[in-house]
Length: 186
Image 1: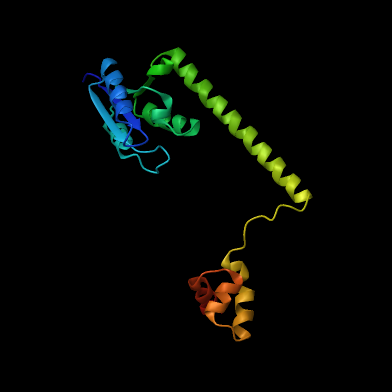
Image 2: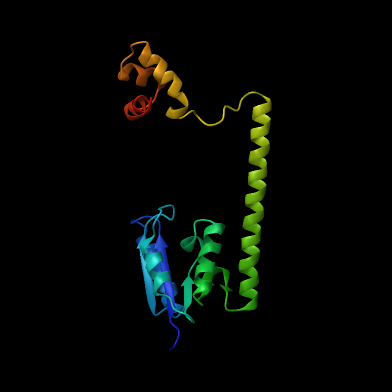
């Protein structure tokens, strides 16, 4: 069965029609026989056309995007998508970077991008840990805001003092359902 060249085009908003048209034009010029397109932000949890395009891809197919940011929201997301495609036997092509995972150089470039992303993430986490340690040493780090369950003793005490659920909610800044959940468990 001959391989299919599949394109994926995305813009963040509906008013970016020229950008979407340009991507489709470039994908067709690259030989894409089937193009999936959508107009929504990459921060949206679900990108239905991306999921459909990956599901559509079969072993031996080529998955093409014009730019890296049209496909992935982060390097970790890119590596996950690349691995998903690779597991299906599909190669990835990113036109503006001239990356093609069907070639040894393309695979090397993808691995380098992934390694750099992982390195950046580790540095960011290290800085975050250092910042938290410094803030704790200065007495400025309060940690996570207490949840209602951590205030169960206060809820019970205030109820025993004759306070209404509304008064407990206002004083402890917790929801009505949290107050009643704690009182039911008592």
